[in-house]
Image 1 (spheres, rainbow, N blue to C red):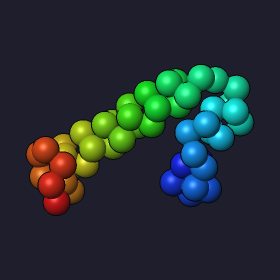
Image 2 (image 1 turned 180 degrees about the vertical axis):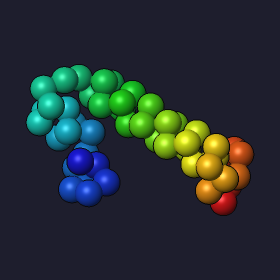
Image 3 (image 1 turned 90 degrees about the vertical axis):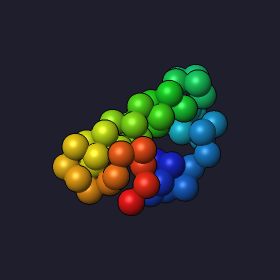
Length: 50
């Protein structure tokens, strides 16, 4: 929602019916998870640098 629709955290929280902190933590977890998977596949250097 943030990336594709350009919504702010408060807007996402309203749509999902959850606190802003939950939105932030879910986004953080998702980015961390993707970074880890990319690193394991060799798509991204360890530490996040391409």
